Image 1: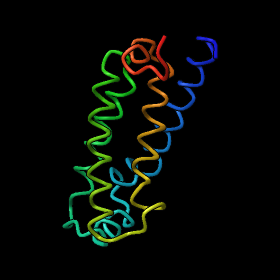
Image 2: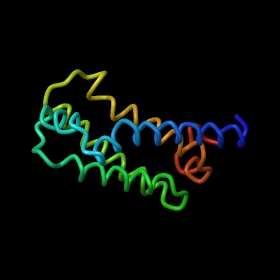
Image 3: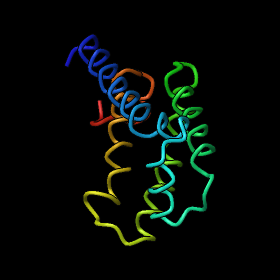
Length: 129
């Protein structure tokens, strides 16, 4: 794949990840939508944590979208996604649809970053030169 194609594919994956996080996770938490409290209660979280988690997610996403801090943002976001995965394991939700969903998101996030960042590709090559 050419460098230009990798860059644009990476940007596309990054945009999909960012739009999904904003629309499906961050916005409902910041807007105090009732579904957030219901879902948090089902997962065993006390009332009122949705806003704080939404702010943390937004901070990680902003760091991920800024080129100079993108790797830091990805590492922090992966930590957050790992916590979400642990929560799903703790409540005994299904493996492929709930528990591994955070892993799927993380793969899209890191894939987008890997494709748009040549320095990251030198650190994590798919094959040896």
